[in-house]
Length: 297
Ligand SMILES: Cc1cc2nc3c(=O)[nH]c(=O)nc-3n(C[C@H](O)[C@H](O)[C@H](O)COP(=O)(O)OP(=O)(O)OC[C@H]3O[C@@H](n4cnc5c(N)ncnc54)[C@H](O)[C@@H]3O)c2cc1C
Image (cartoon, rainbow, N blue to C red):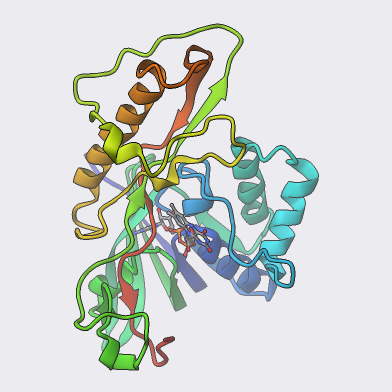
């Protein structure tokens, strides 16, 4: 069987179609550059897509807010998606990229190789699962917006993982010695109220959640902001290579929470709540950090 090899030529190639990659691609395209945006998922948005469901919540205080393209996207959503429906949101992100004639969008395409000439990237190559094609993109400039800095190991660029020692930058919040700890990952679960009762039969692999574990964070289904982001694991593990195992544990933990809510007898109207949605792709808060000419401390 032959797998086609497609070659693309661009001014600018962006790896990763989360918000960072989308904004980089759109602003370059609007400035007149020919852009290829490569995203390994079926939808755009990364952590802020329907697959993970982290809303954009960077600057949103009384005297600060997101501006530029992020604001443009958020305003479109406010107008056309006031109920914050995640599928409509996916459509808005898709449309923002699709409407740029200078962007070639490669979805379901995972970059797994890079060709170098001395210290410069010449091209990157990705496998597109839906078409079973290899796509190679040759470009003048590349942006790694993969969240995992995937181009660092592929090109030999320097990167860091974990926490620095306090002595390195004199930061008060750091600890004595450097370590590999990162923030953990979460698989979000969302519930909805129904007008008919339903039961939940837990699978044998659901984790049992003892009361003493739950005492600090009792679920409150009626709170509008109740999201189970606090089911978080993996900060003391490798947030790239251990992802599949951490996902298995997160899913078992989430089903354990569902079992507790539905079957513990602690929630009087539990029969009228059902699981609406649960992510199987962990939302990753932190992994590799590429080292550039400037380091922000
Ligand atoms: C649970 C959780 C809570 C958070 N809370 C907050 C908060 O309160 N405030 C805040 O400001 N931030 C928060 N964040 C962080 C915020 O979500 C991220 O900083 C932001 O989403 C990063 O955007 P990004 O585009 O850089 O990366 P991502 O959203 O991770 O997008 C990167 C994309 O690149 C794709 N990709 C990866 N590898 C490849 C490859 N080899 N080829 C092609 N594509 C690839 C990925 O699939 C992904 O879709 C939170 C994150 C999580 C997970």
